[in-house]
Image (cartoon, rainbow, N blue to C red; front, side, top):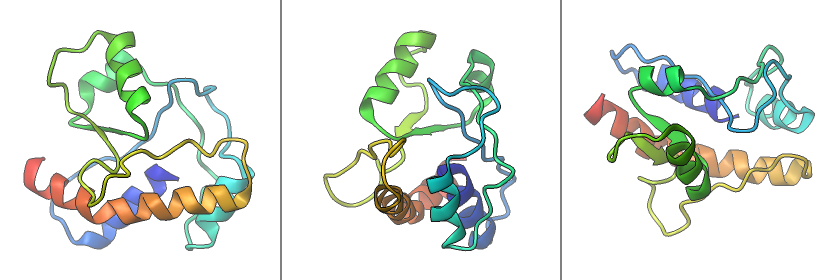
Length: 138
């Protein structure tokens, strides 16, 4: 959902920057389809996830990324631990730049459609602050 939401917001933002958006997972199974609840939650906003396939985070992906946005602090810790990244690597929480103290986005995997909708909406709420960061820093 994050990849599709961010790519859509970026396309609608009018930015002149050439930015590729893609998602990976720490425990993803390479090539899996998006969950039915992810597909439905995105369809409700007119976004199509039917062709999405999961991919696993790799060192090469991290080395080629200008920035990484993850859902939880534990994701950020694990990324740094697994890949032994230099201090100050550009890894942020997706909601890091949004107003408020609630910075984490718990993974909705395996939960109800309502939980997916809530996660989707919180991702959507973070997009203006992410777009502002991208415009300023990339």
